[in-house]
Amino acid sequence: MSNNTANMKVVEGSYAIAHAVMCCRPDVISAYPITPQTHIVENLSQMVANGELDSEFLTVDSEFSALSVLVGVCAAGGRGYSSTTSQGLALMYEVLYNVSGLRMPLVMNVANRAMGAPLNIWNDQQDSIGARDVGWIQIYAENVQEAVDATLQAYKIAEDRDIRTPVMVCMDGFVLTHVYEPVELLDKEKAREFLPDFKPEHILDPARPMTFGAFADPSTYTEFRYQQFEAQLKALPKIEEVARQFEESFGRYYGGLIDGYFLDDAEIVIVTLGSVVGTVKDAIDAMRSEGKKVGLLKIRSYRPFPVQALRKALKDAAVIAVMEKDVAIGGEAGLVTDLKAAFYSSSIRTPIIGFAAGLGGRDITIKDIRKIVEKAEAARKGDLSEFEFLALRKEIL
Amino acid sequence: MKEIRLHGRGGQGSVTAAEIIAVAAFEDKRFSQAFPAFGVERRGAPVMAFARIADQPIRIRSQIYEPDYVIVQDVTLLDVVDVASGLKESGKIIINTDRSPEALKLKTKAEVITIDATKIAMEILKRPIVNTTMLGAFCGASKEVGIESLNKAISERFSGELGKKNLLAIKTAYERVS
Image 1 (tube, chains in turn green, purple):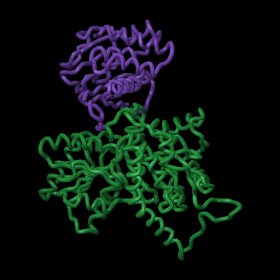
Image 2 (cartoon, chains in turn cyan, red; image 1 turned 90 degrees about the vertical axis):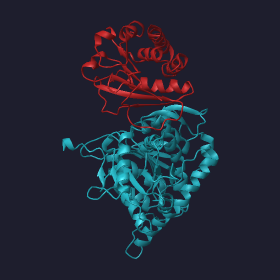
Image 3 (spheres, helix red, strand yellow; image 1 turned 45 degrees about the vertical axis):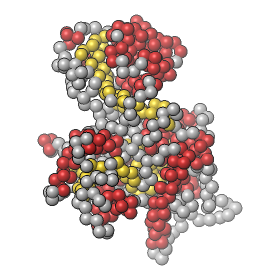
């Protein structure tokens, strides 16, 4: 993050996101309010009402409708926006596949929150990690500034003719949506230069009739899926390229696909994503001052999964510890299994240990991160642990 | 880095107070962060909010367990919440009450400061909303944010007559504890 504070302002994360969306000039905003996303859509609704933002704001009866409306918007050639979280994202599930399968370049902010039951409104990333296979690109933000910048970048990636894939910009609910911190809001004119108006190749037009979402029988279905798969692979260099273009225009860059902190000589590397990255950086500073060679690898793009970049960045680590705010019940968790898969088809055999942490809003402290490093040190000596729930309260089980 | 924990009850403006600290500190050319202890908000229930002030960009996202300062907006919370929990010995706790620090018998080695913010707020604002008055007391007791910056942050948040009254409430509390 740039330390140039002249254009920064202390605002709430949700306001900063709404402002970024305004700079992206969506034709239609279609959303259903749900904690902790509510402030984003409230702010957008206000911007439309007071004339700051020339968009149609549709209030709908559910998240299913919110996203379904945007399928129509995209088909008619419009730029669409939505935002949701948790059960709202789950209610969109069927439509998520339709949007990606129809190659509609929507952008949606996910204010990450735990899934019920049990009912819980607090932050974890079970909602979006659980939707990792629906064909959307997923970018995770460390702080409000990154979420703002990623929102603008997301449209440029999604609308690229080689990509044409929807993007979820994932930001930790409450932790980033409700925090007040210094942010440089996007300049409207610079945003317009960076992201010109949406000019789709194919739209529903009575003058030029065309079928969207045609039936695909076994002779063609595989090829549709392959093209989506290929588009996500093409998105790998595109995400990096767009991050660099953004740097040229706005002067900020914090990794395209991944980013590192004290990675070069790190023996133990913590791999994680989202807002906890900041806490991990402070923990690393403390451990480095004690002589511990600990580093961080931050995942910015979870889908597409940056396999090559991860192999290159992590090849010299002695132990890799993955910490994530989700669990694949009956298996391990999303990121750790993806990372193991990425390494097993290479020659890298670095031990990887996995931790579920911060579920349902449980705070992750520097002490917790130290515990992970202790486990990683044990793994280095051959004491490899199985997937673990960090800071599990065994006394209440 | 200085860490501040605010205790209040839902509806007393603790989150707003934390936000104003962050705005004022940034006005002082320092970095800042403010966030609520995300709860299911109910009027009257004990709530917490947090603020951090530092000379470098703030990265940490965990809650605050060992604050430098604690602000307590409602003295009745002392019966239900361990408000001094983790407070640094070198720190300060500022409590809205008409009682003396000694009378509260708080278990802390930190400095205890009391101020009858409810009385000040009733006299000036004509309402028992004490968050801005407590900010004046925090500013006077800690000097972690400049009074001019605090006044500016307040003026941005509250306009017109209400803004003026809040500035007076802040000044009164600031002078009383300085």
